[in-house]
Length: 129
Image (cartoon, rainbow, N blue to C red):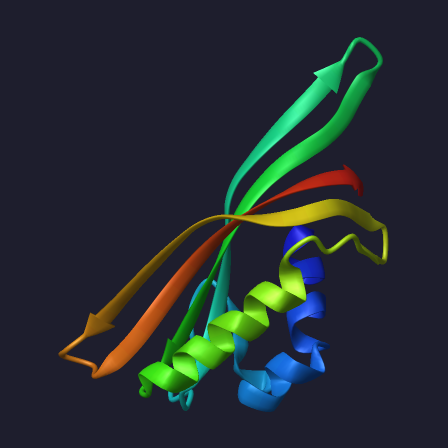
């Protein structure tokens, strides 16, 4: 469910989609023969929080991996991803979230594929489904 909201935030951000078309933003894995740059997002963990009255919220950790053949282009994409997501308070269909924040960043390069990658981890509280 939270994946739909993440996709919606990323795919409707004009700054980001000027760099990466919304058709190149995917959950978990790139579609075959996708041209770069592209973005993959994954839900890493969901930790529910319960009170005596029942479910209160979920703490969700997710990652956004940006891929590009050009390092400078990758940095522009990473800035746009962070700008689109960080501190976002959003609602999409029945999902409501509070303040997305970055929890870590890892960068790398694949010599075999000649691709630069950046993986940003985020945390968000989901307060309604």
